[in-house]
Length: 373
Image (cartoon, rainbow, N blue to C red; front, side, top):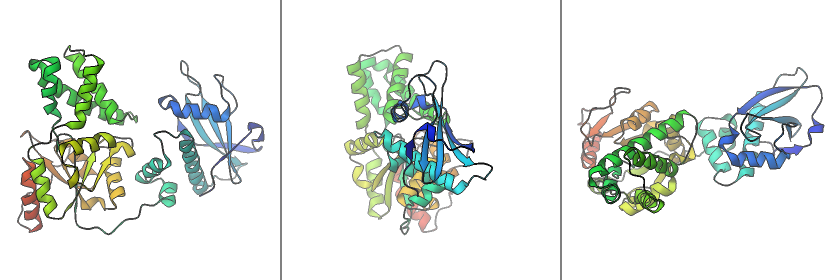
């Protein structure tokens, strides 16, 4: 890959070139840290001015800053290649150069954004320059990998009703807990569809605010903070520990694949006493999209070095099971409520009513004695 881009004065824009649009981000306003970096780097103010100019080797690129009524400038940015005359665009070079510009932007912004995260996302989405620049070594597969969902599968989000009872009263506690969970999942879906991302802690807080408001139980910040802290210490289901212990005795490798942010998921596993059973915790935070987006499941295969078909997802959430199966994984549905499975996707390969049924079911499948698939 080329060295990073160099900022040059707009007056040095090469003559006789045509601008070829390569990439547009129309909503820089969603990422104020990027706006600050662009403003500082190119000396922008609240007036629309000259485009930014970058050079990579002997090629030139301009950043066209977009304005939108009612929003601070710039509200968006376009990256254009400056191509001499009528020469064709070198698409391979442009792919590598745009990737170098994105890495430069990410490095300049710093904070929660990182070049490693961008490279991981690029490999998940099969961006050619990212794949070529930073391939993930694939280790030899050692049997099947079991990937467990966390919330609702290993730990019980609805058990927080006990904590809620002391704040909203026993009559409303279960209803608020259920609304909180539904809103949490709904918000994650909607953010992903809108191509936006807020980490799970933020989503969980906003869902709690909705559930409390709907029930007519506003609370002070201390009570709200206590409820959110409780999410880091959710109770494990009674079947989780024994099932994981039995599976660990077989030597199977197990990981967690969670919508939770890394800090939330790791804290929850630690306080529940389940963390020792897992070789790693994989969060959707790295791809900035929630389940069942296919990038989540591809990311799991990428970071574990396993073919996607050598991973089996274990989840109580039908949308998660359908998403994993669509991505090519094998699946187990934990039917804790005894309700029917989604009609949107094919039935799960295996269904259990409790996690403690899973070790024997998998053993039977491996021995060829199982008919449910």
